[in-house]
Length: 195
Image (cartoon, rainbow, N blue to C red):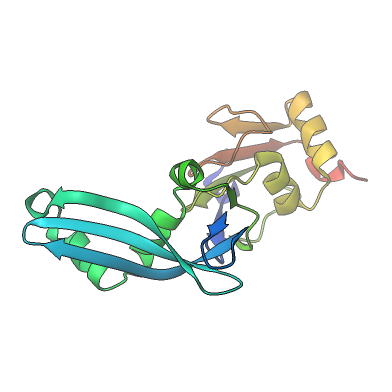
């Protein structure tokens, strides 16, 4: 394969996932959004840190625990500074801890807005490889993403995969969640799939 047929596609989250839990003010199970702010308490050498979520109805808060009763000497001082400064990248890192959030909430809504930033593909090339950059995992399915990238139906993506026209490296299933640095190689007349 020529390096000229290697393209990059970046999946950029436009928002953090909403969580669902009981609101103590509304007295109902409702959605909360990430406020993009940390709360930090330090008592002598012990530190606690939370990521603050707000109810979409009443602005009531829920604090997602990040650190609990941790000795300050065991934490990177740069991380503490990021908590104190409400560093956005650090906030998003914790807001996308889907599995940990699910253990503390009733649900996590991963159906979020995202942007595909991709290079222009050579649709007539005999072989095309796309390398995915996926910084924040929000459970996007591989077959859905491939269909969106190439502008074909999901059923045709699955047919092409069964024929060996679409190959994934590492070799994961089409219904698996997208992973960072996944490479999608498409060969042959794949662009005629929906014709």
